[in-house]
Length: 128
Image (tube, rainbow, N blue to C red; front, side, top):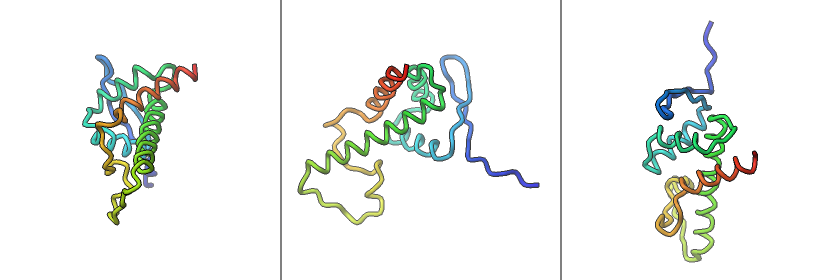
């Protein structure tokens, strides 16, 4: 009998001085991997930041909310950038819709990573 394909994956993370496991679905792992690459941050460090802000949420739930907040902020920032740039001309590049390929000037806006962590903190505070 064949094993069913799991949509969930487990990764180990070091929090403080102990190791624990984090289980997310493949979609969220792919998004988190893209965030790590785009922001040039290490996995353990980002998860520790999320851990510090998660309040009573499970670590997995806090990670999913962080990913959602990060993507929302990146898309919202991109939409604002485009709406304030009337002479913007979009190319025909297939990657043009990727939020990680967007060319807005990073120096003119707060870090998406910082903003998403701040939004996660506010979310947890409101949910408490």
